[in-house]
Image (cartoon, rainbow, N blue to C red; front, side):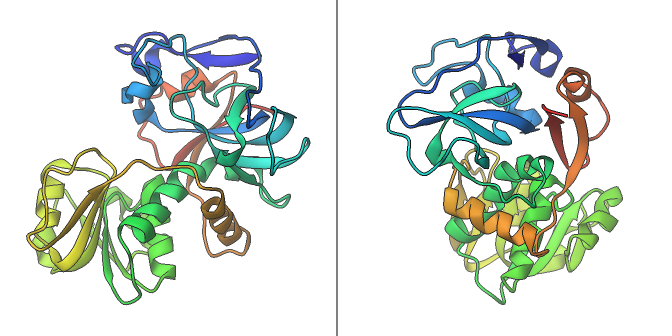
Amino acid sequence: MKAIVVTDQAAGVAGMTLTERPEPLAAINDAIVQIHASGFVPSEMEWPSTWTDRAGRDKTPSIPGHELAGVVTALGYGTTGLSIGQRVFGLADWHRDGTLAQYVAIEARNLAPLPGDVDFTVGASLPISGLTAWQGLFQHGRLQAGQTVLAHGAAGAVGTMVTQLAREAGAYVIGTGRAADREKALDFGTHEFVDLDNDTLKDIGSVDLVFDVIGGNVQKQSAALIKPGGTLVSVVGPVEARPADGLAIDFVVEADRSQLGEIVQRVRDGRLRTNIGRVASLDNAVATLNSTERRKGKTVIRVLP
């Protein structure tokens, strides 16, 4: 099969090559999926799991990518809940070969049915962004109607999901980003927008929940805004700044079939819009992922035409 592989952590995306790799075999509880589309997160090149297995041993050459939409072509021994020929989407294991390939072996529990009226490109754009927003807001942030959410990176792939899900849940959403992001953030539903280059965060007042995708000084300023009993949720590693009277939680997104079902249903009925930026074929993926152009939304690689 065709696959994109990486071998040199120092080279990052610049070290990607499109090559031939053996098709994967299905282990116990696995499904083999023929990938139609794969989402990609550039920060994957910095994750240890891209380069090593769970025991810390070098696993290169490895196939990056973790979001997929495609069709089940084979099932491993003991695999239940899926059928051959079924349309699926999901989030692949961090430590196994990923989804920038024509086929992937993935635990069946990490997949959810993809309805026939949802395009594979859309399906591939949802798992990391959608699940990160869902788990950060509802599992870790315990969001309630009437609360105020400060959503950093509100025009990004995760931020636009955070905004829409929080607003649907009855929250007041204040988004942040660069000045050029204002129109997009407001279009996706933020009630207010703060330009981090020119505005002052402390002027927005207190909030119940901060969804942090930036860290550093922005996280420090945000922690000071949290109301007593509120929560700072971070996806950028260990929390460095904590609210005076509240919780600080950092987490890594996990695959969840039922949550994926909730997310895709919202896409189907128009309550949730995807934020897809560049779309490229597998043959052109290396050039696309190496582009220095600022990313606006999720990058999706169409593996099949």
